[in-house]
Length: 392
Image 1 (cartoon, rainbow, N blue to C red):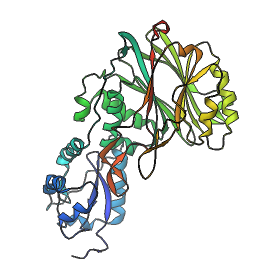
Image 2: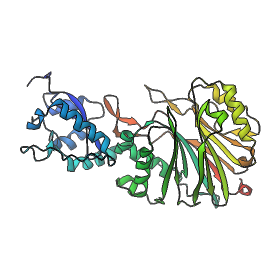
Image 3: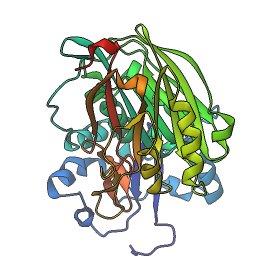
Image 4: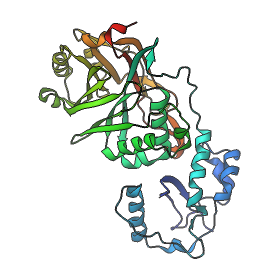
């Protein structure tokens, strides 16, 4: 049995909405899998019964047919109109490489157990000092496609991050397609994953809104049934004078008896800092509650400009690290922030933060290994009172 046989190769398959690395006899024995990072003898013993080095008759499927079927499987994930019946080999009884599709959920649950969640010091219940409050977050989900959102590890991390931190509104940058946000809301509203279902403080009334741009997309996920009843009033592109420098989306919410305007930004690389400052300054003079957030990773100088705006407050310190180094996964520098105008400052509780833990999962690929991050950007959050007179 040759190690380098032409038809024995690594590939990804998508079965039961779960991406599995299919190893086609690239090792002489299964114990060789222990050479893979994150696979120790305990984990190998737990999944050994699902693995096999045996060849099957359906290996003879032509490359053209295999590519076509693979493409359909990736696209499907619950939304494709392609309904071809899967081909089964009489000798395998619906088993591919020794892994029955019925047990893939069990494998995921095993990986989920090994993917620890952070210890929650405070469960935020939409109040501060007994008075109504809410949290807004911003997160660059980095090429958030349908395939990425369909990964059960990604889905679990995004949903649990929202729930554990009591986030009512999440402004998102770098979304490739709206269906990706829809999948997250569907999981939050009708949980199929154990770790989402077990979280009791979930209204299960999550909604999303999205604005499409030529080279990138902006969106929001918000809790429409939480303690403060967040209601979407309208959403639109940002001001015309700002759109030439940024991807910009303005969304207006009604939270209890207060109105909140949020500008979600993703600054273009060729943009001059002064151009952004002039446009943003006009918005901050509004007499309504105005919050600006987004991704400013195209240049660290944008953070310097935002800190010099008049009648406003930059929430996070300029040296706050919320972008992970590509090799060490250690927060490197500040790429996102919040700016609040004078009117909204009356609602600010003074609390804010960067979420740096619980962003990985063993079901998320990380190069040739597993245990990857959902994104190399950390989500940030800020907290407000619903009523301005209730400031600390």
